[in-house]
Image 1 (cartoon, rainbow, N blue to C red):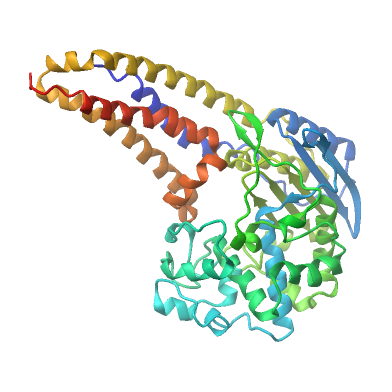
Image 2: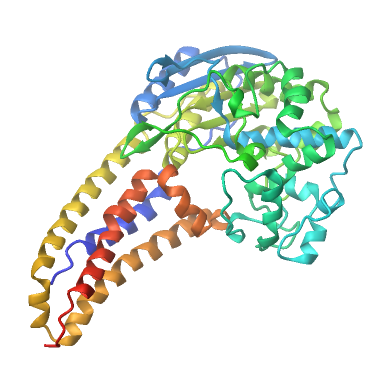
Length: 490
């Protein structure tokens, strides 16, 4: 019996995993070396064209020049019945880390903690799998992602209801993937440890501390680390075969400090101004310089620093939201870009193209034409067509199973065994190839179990294509063949 479906599935899986890394290549970041005035008409044009190209639901933008917000605008929809505005609340993803780092910096300046001290100084029971490393990991290591911990060394799946303390205790099973202090390895949970430290040292809930000591002083009235307090939250969207689909954003209790603060373009513009103005008194100038000084690699304290500090930025990506905050201190310019569209491929395609286009205009440069680079909608439609083709081929193969027992009775034993074995072997090869490519792409940020659990919400169409339409039917056919196996050999 011919295996018509598995070869196309294997080819497509290989194509998919090799294609994704190339999607961002046509859009490089603009060099921050322009001083001309900002063309706001061009800015509106590039946003409109990128939203149309990728089918983005809503975008909110703030542009800062000096210590003034010179542009604030919302585009598209916050939900089906609400327009997007610059006051619409959205999750800011890993941009939350900069607030956690700022809180830690404040506590350090108050003499309540030492950034160079081991975490065990303040959390005596703090442990990772390596006892020596447990004693060596400092607060500064966590701030700069140089603790030696990474996603690939932490295979624990935490419940969304797990507390910050439970999350920190779970690190006792975390394996180091580099010596402590030797290498930058982005590790989300490290910032959950820092958020827990804020609570321990201050004696306040993390959300309350940020509200009193950061949000209120900066005038960020619509920003909160308590998602239940958000009254103007946008609908978040994922994507299914190129189409934006509404999806509720889940909020793990333990992870707010690493990626689930809620804000607006207007509030984040105030924050960007404060950061470019030396923290506006919330920390000393010396501490601000430390915040913006990279450790190993280009990561400072909750910010990424490139070109010797000419550009300082951080982005954030949730399943249904995206944020970008870019600072250009030498040019006294900055911008904030919030989007209520998630999906992992969006973060590498539409987000890159939109951000690069906005950056170019803000820096007085010509943006790349909107026709350059892949459209996430085209990519999604392509996956949809592939999915339908695979389902059609699988349907044909399932129908052919009605006569498989009779055909198998006349097969040589080796051929019969091969027919069954291929139903298990080929989909297994597909999965190995796909996830090995993802591992190569993500490096130490890849964790097999965590990525599989993430896929139904973060990559729903890829999940359907890879599992429901691609490999699962083959396994079912193999099991069915075993059930239909003739009792007597031919």
